[in-house]
Figure 1 (tube, rainbow, N blue to C red):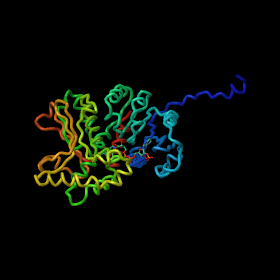
Figure 2 (figure 1 turned 120 degrees about the vertical axis):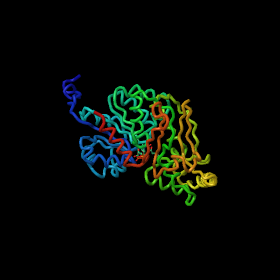
Figure 3 (figure 1 turned 45 degrees about the horizontal axis):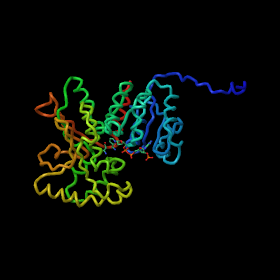
Figure 4 (figure 1 turned 90 degrees about the horizontal axis):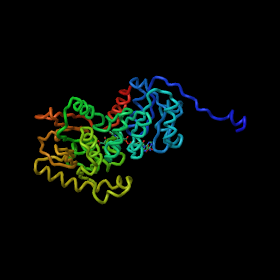
Length: 360
Ligand SMILES: NC(=O)C1=CN([C@@H]2O[C@H](COP(=O)(O)OP(=O)(O)OC[C@H]3O[C@@H](n4cnc5c(N)ncnc54)[C@H](OP(=O)(O)O)[C@@H]3O)[C@@H](O)[C@H]2O)C=CC1
Ligand SMILES: N[C@@H](CC=O)C(=O)O
């Protein structure tokens, strides 16, 4: 090597470690956008945002990251998407705590959670695709979370204290026996309001506008999102359930299952007739429809639309309320019930922030 080249060779500079928390945010949609707002509040003053990305662009420049219009600007300006340069921004921060926040519904990103934990990053997620996906992914995650924190409060009940309660009970030697409830904020919102006076599709469009549905609302209507939450709870309770062990009833008509999201959204009215019929039948018998999730003591799991009497606990929910009824060895004669809003940007973003602040 010539003397000139030798003197120009890049020598890696050790970044001095500093106390503090650096974060990278993936996803600036409903939840990620609400989190960006929370990051500008005093509660988050100790956190340093070093990278933000949507599906196509990202930003790591401190000046741009400090811009209140960051989310809008990222739609048209920014570097091309590249996970490696976001991780590099975390490294360059020198922060002793480095956190990746996943506020997307992207499967490929979820598939990287375990790898990121192994590499020394903490992961905080609203994305359920790994923990609520294939059992092999769940197992890889369990091994990796021994290394770093996996903040998953937002994945169930949009941050209601379900997983934390379950873990606490297990720590005390209690065991989950059965689980039942309404695990979807959007389906709760829809069936709590649906009385046949306006089309189901109108309510669905409203729920989407309010940020309660998944990016593709078929993930809610197909029962997939509820099944994921059931799997996350069941697995955290020690039931090693595979995705094929949950019986799932889909509300998506056959003809709308294979079309792209845009086409589906343009054909929402096709949901109306079958649901109007089921509603009328239930009403004639004095019942109401609720999308329930159930896990029995033998590990048999089902999610789907159920006609329940007006006296059923799930018949008395409001708005986006979720309800989790946990029967355990110690909460035996009466279940422990956790209930409250189970979808929405603010509560979900708060769950993410809470998980980040709890790392330390
Ligand atoms: N909404 C709610 O009430 C709740 C949502 N959640 C979960 O939060 C997650 C996000 O939901 P929500 O905010 O409603 O969805 P949105 O569709 O509003 O936002 C998703 C965001 O993810 C971005 N994204 C997609 N792929 C990538 C990628 N590869 N890299 C970086 N960003 C990417 C999208 O980018 P672009 O803007 O370019 O499309 C978008 O900004 C989901 O997993 C959902 O299940 C959990 C609890 C409650
Ligand atoms: N789309 C989801 C949002 C939270 O996970 C729901 O409706 O519950």
